[in-house]
Image (tube, rainbow over all chains, first blue to last red; front, side):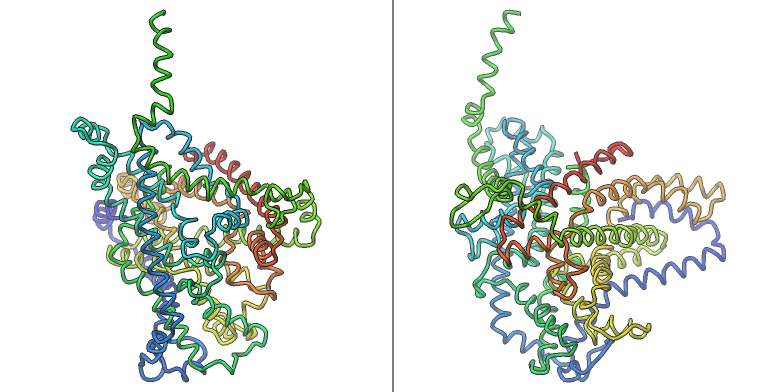
Length: 307
Length: 313
């Protein structure tokens, strides 16, 4: 990120001998950053350690974990994958991610393309309308009635269609399309290309980095999506993984707040399965994350430039 | 003159919508699903906001329900919930502005002072990570860590506080809520500041070095002014959303014991509207919140335009 300045600035600054005060600052600074990094990663590490722990040891354990308790075991994972709810949720989530992302990317591409075409007369009013939705929305209740009114209530598509197109993603792609030189399109037009050909043969290949960004944004959003299901889904067979996670992590745990003690009647493995499910549901994203990081960061930068 | 006057109607005809559509059928075909999407899922709900002024009964439909004017609004303003919701919404936002907003700035400046590129990259990679963890998981871990035997609770007990389920104590709720937000977002939010730091002219540092300025003074006189425009714009935008709190996080973390400090306008709308089915009343509350949000945003934007060249529109 900061590479450009650093490569130039650092050698220059290194030439000057560091004073004692600066050395103290460097040490304190690095320690502080390490502390922040540790705080960031520790809850995730804790979850991983707990997920490989012995169920009984975990139940009686209090406080921090620096390694799995008892002999390392995959008992929890075995139980997690044996849970029909989790498997159901997993497959629903995967279906949602795939269809939602495909729909989202196609819609975003078409939207960004038409609002950047000078020959499209509705371009101005359409863009104004789209921007208006970023500042004012009807709110969850009128939206709920629209979803119900068109018959999407309690259907798989209620988790996708109402959020089919993300305006931020549209703006990212629009910014990218605006920077495509006109000459490229003109030469294609001279060769007799129509709009579909211009979009697929010129804009698509040239915008691959931006398309990667929005694909990832859509995929992550759908993977983590839970409240459309809370609002629109009554049938548990349609629940995405995050809804089952909510039951496991939040709803059961809230029982505790009344008594202040763990529910003894709960199966003693519940704690263990809880951590395993968190790991199972989070790992797919965190595993691909390091490879895709540069794209995510790029997305923030394009999005930050005025739409 | 006459030639121009004669040509005018021809131009108008050429640029008419129908003509435009006939000549660009593919464009209009591509625009159709996008336009339909925005009309159905964004503009139709905007029209649906009218139920805030009606006594909406789903069976009678939008048009069949009776008009009640502003009575839902006056009922809300006179209810005992109004001051509590307003107070909590503002308090959470104010605390976020004070405790959460500066963290990414501080992080970016401090990390920028580290010489090792590898250390910087690794720190960035790790701190960006929580951004991608789902809200449900984050809140679930927060619930787990603050239960009476949780990791965080143990830490606070060691510091002399009583052992309780911390999320059942109203006094702790807002602190925990904001702590979670800082944890999840400070790394990701720092990206924009790293970019601003990259944009600072290196010649300025070299000149300062020659003049004998140490690193602290370089930070104070070059780095900070360099990213100040970014800070100002982001802060104004933050102020523009002083009345909005994302309800999903609140709904995941609160419970009846903590409503006193945790319930905000958006979570109240969800609870009253969709679980207690007072549709019109909840829509009125939601509309009140949206209108205030828009006014704040317009104010923040015009302020931003005045103090810097940056603005949303």
